[in-house]
Amino acid sequence: MGQTLDGTAVGIGVPRVVIIGAGFGGLRAARALANAPVNVMLLDRTNYHLFQPLLYQVATAGLSPDEIAYPVRAIFRKQKNLEFRMTEVQQVDLAGRRLLTNTGEIPYDTLILAAGGETNYFGLDSVARNSFGLKSLADATRLRNHILRMFELAAQESSPEKCLAMRTFVIAGGGPTGVECAGAISELIRLVLAKDYPRLNFDDVRVILLEGTGRLLPGMPDRLANATVEKLKQKHVEVRFGAQVTGFDGTQVTLKVQDAGGAVPDSRNETLPACTLIWAAGVRAVQLVDSLGVKQGSQGRVLVNSCLQIPEHPEVFVIGDAAFLSTNGDGSKPVPLPMVAPVAMQQAAVAAENIQRHLAGKPLKDFVYKDPGSLATIGRNAAVARLGRWEFKGFIAWVLWLVVHILQLIGFRNRLVVMINWVWDYLFYDRAVRLIE
Ligand SMILES: Cc1cc2nc3c(=O)[nH]c(=O)nc-3n(C[C@H](O)[C@H](O)[C@H](O)COP(=O)(O)OP(=O)(O)OC[C@H]3O[C@@H](n4cnc5c(N)ncnc54)[C@H](O)[C@@H]3O)c2cc1C
Image (cartoon, rainbow, N blue to C red; front, side, top):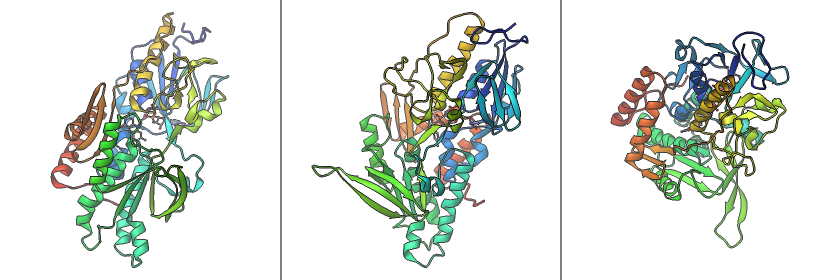
């Protein structure tokens, strides 16, 4: 007979571990439980695993959606102790140990909550309504259609002001997503679309990257962050620091700009005519966790103990973007771990191991994050990479970025097709997926 994590016996032979989310964390946890004496039920609202780091390439016409997503059922074809269900979890009943979903109730003995994050608009309603987030395949396709449509409309527009607004692309947020997006949009426009629209003036096309603080790429050393700014400028991206978006109505972005130049920092409001605002300035835990009624840290992430459990509900593990764990492990200095794939995957391995340790009557293990470093690409031949004590920039970092991303993609076919696409685009300065759907 199996046991739940707080020691009470479960009625039927094998305990049921339910995992919410087939993202980076959920997938790794499900695989790690392949040989455990448990039944695994994996739930996701989509029927595929999405490789979010390449979403911006779908948005900028480099890759098509099916090349960065893979069906969950195909991944787990051979795992005998796993059942997958496509369903949206609407509520977690912690007291009753059951999930309320759009296809019915699902009981659990142990739960791994790996539902990830969502775009955080910080209460800016007009931005939420009119800007473009980048969190799902639908977001990426919508943005690709919009960028391409702007050039079709600009080619027919008689008002110079409107035409300029259509050809101004503003990206908010100077983290890796904002940087990668800005570089890729600029290259799409100048290397590819300029050839498609010979009658359109491309000299005054603007790609503007706004960052509220004074530097790009938190988590990267200053040297690499500064090199990124220089490279973006070479790629015709305007980088503005101390600029916070306060609103966007679909035709102009309103900003609060901090001028740090004088003795006393001064702030002023500014408007920027633009029909496109891409919001890469914030992420928070999925709203599903707000209804749990347990303590949450910054960005709505659920506070977990060092073994990744909700303290009052040890049968529930929370991992990845949805979890808040301070780096020192005891919660005294709550510096949250970054919302990145390696955190989710390493936590998944520890949560799965702790479930097996519990079943074997062994003490649970503390989670300790091993930072593998970080990478960001700025476009053709340009990237920055921090791997342990090593720092790389330029072509070497770019090749590293390509190799790491190809290796992490799921499915041989996806790897091959993405590689062929990248080689083609590199050689012929092309983007294959320039369709407005
Ligand atoms: C554009 C972009 C670029 C990124 N680039 C990088 C990068 O270069 N490197 C890096 O390390 N990280 C990157 N990240 C962050 C990384 O993708 C996340 O940290 C990682 O995906 C978190 O893993 P997770 O398992 O917590 O959640 P996710 O991978 O987001 O998975 C969550 C899963 O839960 C499902 N789900 C959510 N709610 C429900 C529900 N109610 N019911 C059923 N299913 C649900 C979702 O469909 C999803 O499949 C990027 C993120 C984005 C958006």
